[in-house]
Amino acid sequence: MSTAVPRLIITQDNKFWFDAARDGRLEIQRCSDCDTLRHPPAPACPACRSFSWNTVESTRRGTLHSWTVVHHPKDPAFDYPLAVGLIDLEEGIRLVADIAGVDHDDLELGMELEVGFAEHAHGDVLPQLRRPAAEQGSAE
Ligand SMILES: [Zn+2]
Image 1 (cartoon, rainbow, N blue to C red):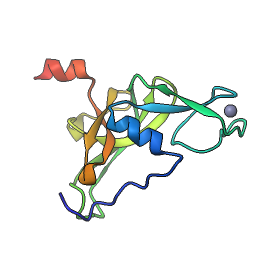
Image 2: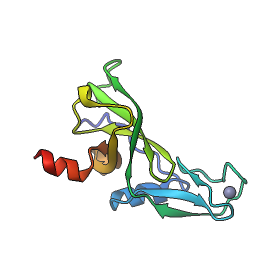
Image 3: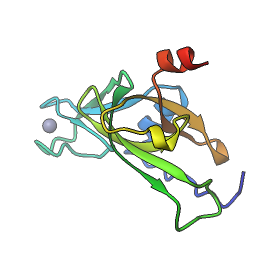
Image 4: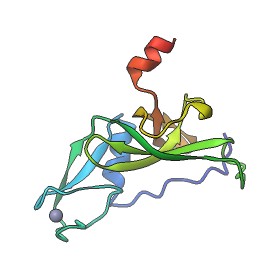
């Protein structure tokens, strides 16, 4: 893999999230004061401005809210065409991630997907949208 692949920018606000991803868990930040869920990770609650938070573990299941297939401009660090989707998670949080293992012509609004994880350059682990495991099993 190319060394031109950009590195993740880990901060004290998002480190918990990338650490969980490395362990195969999708964590959602939750305000300790008003229970509002938020993503991406941020230091303060957008609803009540509290700095107190904890996390809940996502089921990683959801539906495809939108997607795009990127053809251009091409960055030599990535493979094209590159499908990128927005998933509406069961918890009510929306997440953006690459889509893998789904023919681009088969993508449909509202289709069920789940969040898996894939290792990239530099050992970085990022979420990846896939067909639910049950469907993958029946297709093989
Ligand atoms: Zn809050």
